[in-house]
Length: 125
Image (cartoon, rainbow, N blue to C red; front, side, top):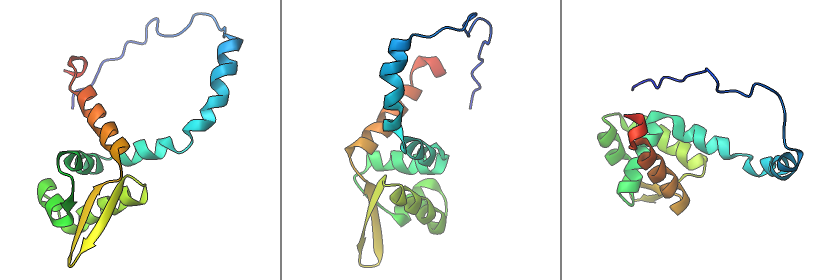
């Protein structure tokens, strides 16, 4: 992964001031994002993100398929799938001896798709 050089010169205010009206509108809304960091934490793991991405490409995958796609054991795949399920990002259905996973809803699908599209933009190349 390429590192992006961040210039720290002139990237902060040279004097401290704030707009009370803006603060009054925005600050109370910060409560509304409670728990969102857990979604991003779940998807910040490369293996779980790959699984979520694979589930945007296929409606559902069994644990064995996920393990083979990732080149890992079924135990590892199952662990990460269970984590995604516990975080409310994936659903599962047991069919006989197989367990199939899918993304929980279209919001998760859109979140992963948009993040992938954003990463492909020229700004990261």
